[in-house]
Image 1 (cartoon, rainbow, N blue to C red):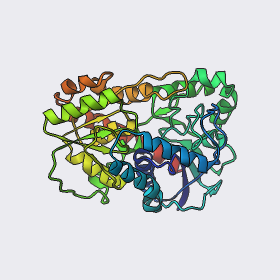
Image 2: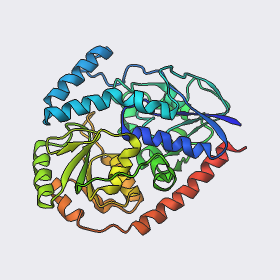
Image 3: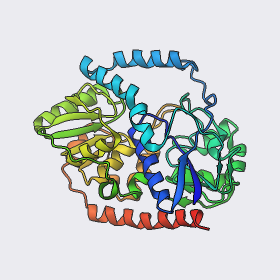
Length: 374
């Protein structure tokens, strides 16, 4: 039995990061492989954020202060705090992750991906800058990536911070390269001269709704709309509009993944229960990559709010536009929340979407098989 490692964002407290890691593990295990998650050493971020301390205690205090400032009820703030604090103890063991970090193990194959594993020009001290995410010092007989993303890192940023050469040299050492978006595709081509495979996020490839026995059936009396966004990212004006819109439609606003001022109820649940909540939702509003994917695999009416990048600040335009375009769903994009009313009234041709995903599934199985079965 081959020993395969997955190096991903598996320790990030985030439903999307968790479910993509779980999905890729399930896909690899189909090839009769023993799978383990591999950690990388988190180094100082490339972009120096003066407001961000390297001290974990200070960072936790800062997060606590931010939580107090969020516009939401005290009850929901407490629920959100408990959710963040208990996540790893509750759900990491299901992935096979312990408190002991797994650095540089001997492997038959190391898969780097999916998620934003190549997003190296950023200021998040929880992720930092690590060349191990590009395969440095690995002890695997074979090195591949799967649906890896540079996120908001562009070729211009790599050149500006003088990281293009070292990353290009490391990428050339991969046996196979697979990316999940056009920005990443172009970077790999320019730095290596190779044409990588284009793959969908594993949450779309692994058929969660048919194959995952961990997704429960839930009975809820409310008719509800899911607002899936990180805490504080939905603006005051957007919250006001969403609150008014949901009341007009007779829907409660269930917030998942973050608390918002317009939320009627914050849902603290397992990653697998998230998919059950999406399954029963009337509609979805999100500004996240995986919030869009959770909507798609549950055949929901949804709108995705696009936010443009501004310098080194957060932006989701590149990855979300690319994802939705690849599935012929670019018409679900909104830049003004008020457009949600029109977009969520339009039915989606999910027969066509499922056909596209099915083709990518076949392509993914071939890619993984070619790298895991010699």
